[in-house]
Image (tube, rainbow, N blue to C red; front, top):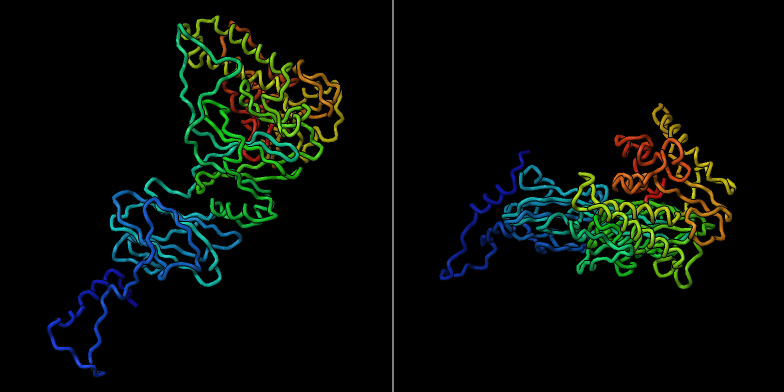
Length: 546
């Protein structure tokens, strides 16, 4: 059967319109033979009853749609993005379909109109989001087909925006600081990096040892943090949309939560080049449990996930964060917990016997560095004295604040090992294990996961930092990445005499070697290590990068 386009049907109906009688004509008799009036096309074609404004966000439920289930969108000369987000939990949304027309002659688009160039279907992807971007010079019409009564309780959001898609993922990844058995330290994606002004000769000055941060942003982005047990999240059938995550966090007994910036510890300038971040101390987690976290921007844009695991119930190291002299230090340290009601150390709880020497080291290094005519005599075309001080600060903080770690359940290198006072010598096997791993990975067998640079410490093992207070529990230290040292060597003038241990020989006694760089000499080794990074978004941490 030949199907005519709906726009052509409308034109034919207009041609058949019969003008009504003149108001001066005699009224017709009420006999049954009177000819009924011919309806106009406007009474045949459905009219949308709900209007969606430009730059609007509208929630709706299938059981409460307008009749007919069509939304109108005003005409505009701007390019418009229309996004649809599923908000329902554990409800299949594949049977619900959305059709868009940007032609005024098709005010109720459906599957039969898809051959028309002005009609599209907005299909939802696997994350529960559908998107269309294009012109609406004649306005637009969005129709909803629920596909039957089984999904009448499904809820959705429709966003109409002139500034780009509202629901598509636009947020960078959140960042894991570290965990204890029941607390996680997490950061939002970075935002609002402060302007960096390079000092110049002859008034070449460098930041003080105890950094003073610039003013916080007055209008920071609205980030939220969603966190859930990975097993519960994977079984719940939750779309990756802001409205679905809000609904999931509202359920009792699921362990899922959505934390606002008001529930954070405030903003923190972890890295000037990256920008500010919100930071959260999330309490009440379960020991030895896998968790998944998302960043949610403006309640609609959901980042990709990061994953992490809490430590075992016997993990004794508390977290430390918010140190102005070591802004990147945010992990578990081998130190007694802070006084109640504190749950993590910060600059106000650390002993002066530990922090005063560190500040002195930074001050003395900066003084020595400024004996070089910084800003006048370039010792490198790539780096400056400012880069040198920044790299030294990162290295000094990493080696001064040892990081507690814990082996994975499948990691045989540390589990079950009794710490000894001379256990540091066993770390010399790290580099050999890296080479074995690389050889194994190049074979036809399935590659194994590399082991973290963990070194058991007993209560009698002398700490690397002579000013570190005694700790009453045995622990495993996650060795610093060798690259924190080589970065200083590359960034600083030769006259400072800063040297790092050689990767092939002594470096593995005190550093994690071969994870980021290959462990061989030369610039060609950079980033060519076994994993090419110190950590990843799946919760693996191979060495301490600060």
